[in-house]
Amino acid sequence: MSVLELQGVSARYETRAGQQVLQSVSASLEPGQALVVLGPNGAGKSTLVRLAMGLLRASSGTVRVAGMDPAVAGPRALARHVAWVPQTIDDETGFTGLELVLMGRAPHLSGWGVPSVADEARALEVMKELEVAELASRPLAEVSGGERRRVWLARALVQEPKLLVLDEPTAFLDVKHQLDSLKAVRARVGKGLAVLAVLHDVNLARLLATHVLLLKDGRALASGPVNEVLTPARLSDLYGVPMIEAPTPGGSLFVPAP
Image (tube, rainbow, N blue to C red; front, side, top):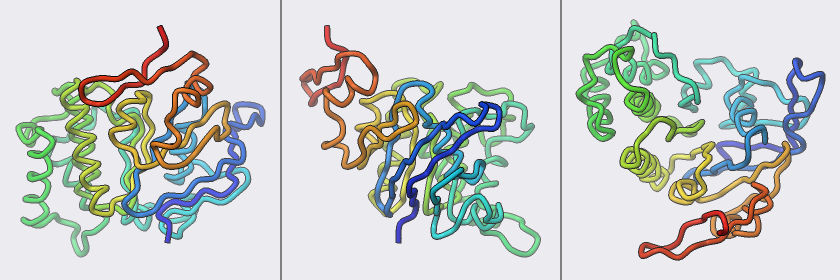
């Protein structure tokens, strides 16, 4: 069964006088796949994320996450299957790094809802993997935006979802932590995790993606396996600037044509 299924989905916001933000978009995501959504500003990328998280109801078409309609599933039921790292993160939560990461275990707790010793050990293990273990006892209001984003990613991974939703996961990260964070996610894709991610950097998208969805003006320009979709011709059409694939010692990079 698909972890995420979008069939002919359209969406609009009331504040936009009925203007369609997404128009008849279809996509599916299986376990062990990472679908990266690319497109210019205003293409509908974050709207698609909101649909998958049940934060917005489709005006037409169907959305299913782990077989559920996310717009009507209860938050706890949805949280057992889906974890989310939002684009904008609250800096003033008052929580320490470890406290925030342990919140990822909440959907799986019973009784008093108190994390176990094993939960705490798992949280610290993931924080160490993402190089934020030293933030375990520090209030998040005192750390950098990039550090907070890695703590939120640790929270999402500790949640052990079937679907991980990432909206601009590399924002505020330096180059090393961009690569390390995406490699940590991609390693879990190899073990069966499904990922829906919004990115702006085409080359980082190729590092993470097994599949790509190109959105332009709220419509799907192309969708499919990464090596079939990411071509200079399609990227030129997507962004409205000539793009080329330039050879490098390690492979190639997509760059604007000189």
